[in-house]
Length: 188
Image (spheres, rainbow, N blue to C red):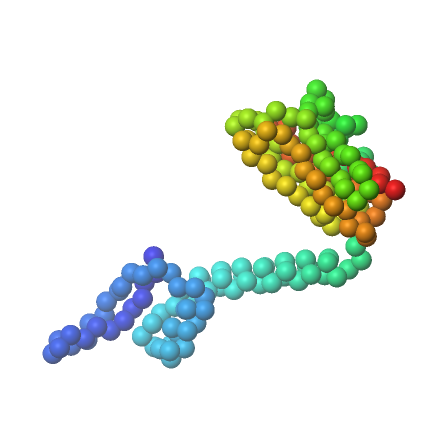
């Protein structure tokens, strides 16, 4: 809670100081209260204001960095499957601790002209299912994604390739128990 000191007058009774408990104001509300009161009669929690200022500076800095990365030269998502972080990203060639799960977790990719179909041959149940498919171009642009639910009968998704998608694609499949799987495919 945040205390606000104010003077209270009721009829002929002289002014008394009271502390009223209210929800903490935002930084903007605190500044407005301070400006309206001229800095008199309302004490602003300086520590909270400093925290809000630091949080804003962090968020602004993060947005600037993200913008700089977007404006800068695009980089490939990964140079090769060997560059995937081990025990975080799994492939048919590098299944890590899930070696016996490759057939039911690594997405299969079928390319027919401009149509790409991802299939993960995995049973779907409340406790164990494929959560999501994503198709990503080599420059990191998401071509499409689909979220699945335990009630879905199968994990199959279809996407239309844009003309500028390049020749290398990454198909991803995420299992709620057996992590993130990637299949790399060349289209041309």
